Image 1 (spheres, rainbow, N blue to C red):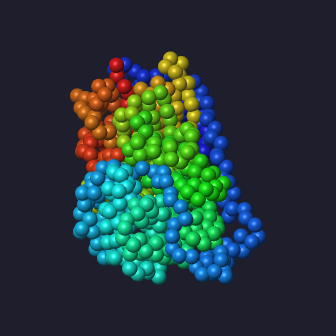
Image 2 (tube, one colour):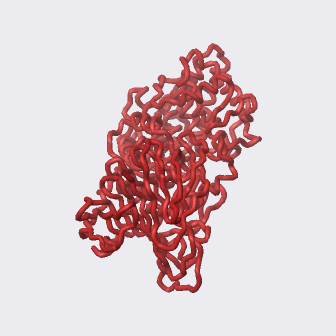
Image 3 (cartoon, rainbow, N blue to C red):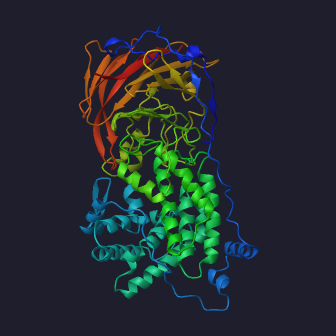
Length: 618
């Protein structure tokens, strides 16, 4: 759960027929006289049961060691109390399980960091963090995730000197470790934990050179960073950062000498933190696919460390891996790339596939992710994604978005209706000044009242008050002539306090995937009746490469897709359609110009209903 209640309710057969399935001639809206069979309620899928996220079962002696290490007794004193501390070294070489980006690695060899389309000269980077970098670049630089990119672009002997030069510059700029986290971007728990893990996984790149002095510095930094994480992992900025910190501790316990006490300490903390990070159906509490990817990546790299020392990871880590992958797959479109939710961009399908393959989890996407909040409906070549939950709590989110009741729709791998996405990569080619706008309700394909966000957008990626409750009903319905459909209905209370109106959205995807019907309703909340009118806009951000043209009557639009197919969009009622400019973040987090269809007008505070239809022609 995300801290709020999702209410699941059944509807009558009459409600199920409110938007009929049979389509009218010429792609127009149909009359309410068309018949549908009574709805068959689809029961929520059985929730995957989380394992007991308690520390791994160990003997009394190991429990005592873990407790003593937690209270500050050194690993050498616990592992070998009558011997001198072991010299710094690595106990094994890790095989990197996740390939990096070859293009970004090539840019590094040429002297630049390449992050979301922006080249930043390495020579101009302030590794000490006094001059703040753009947030995406800052994360890449200080987490050392760029080591995977460098490794992907050329043989080790060709790229190791580049890695050593950059690492030497970073170590020179960070000679002292702060007492507490937050003293500059290098010393957040998220970056420090990921850095320790990446140093250990990519050790051959940074320790294979002939410079003995640098090698000694790197080995010392590995030990110092592990000790810093030991002391500060409880002061993390959020749960995902805590998981990164514990992953670095566990990896150091596996690969550095006299590490058994640290490993026992790290495993216990990691499993507890994962239990707090992940909901019952496997989705992280931030509801962000980027956070889901990061959590899976941390587990994949840590498991490679276990494999390097020929040790099995705790069973709970394998369990959590199996839980994390299916919700992520629920947000993939037909081409394998991700939908744009909670600050994410349309992460490339190849990157997602490589991550899933490295996880070793073979599974299908969850279609009905109640706790994480995303509904997925697949109808042959059509894929519908629907945000049917409140936004995440502020303490969990890094790029929280007011996207409740927004949807994305694709057909045959072509995105037709999208969200803008990209708030989390602002600072690349997407300017930082757009970050808050990309998190707004208007940047998503849903209804907006009076240009106001359904949930308040705050600074620093946080969100405020707004949607606190979402009702959801999912069912299959059967039409007499044209087969069945999946019907999703949800409502939220984000506009009740300001306007006295509840937004309800009904989506019906026909089983052949060629027709998506919708109805947006504004319903007066009980005891909130008001006089007057208020402006509304229903926004449909249209996917890249699609040509739009308005119909002569102003009640529809034609969509010409790159694959040669033609779709028609029609509305009912008094609203008018216009075409406006929009922006979309592509698979590399780069901005692409797109267009949006906007249905707008005035609606009585007594409520209103707006039906629409998206249909493939021919």
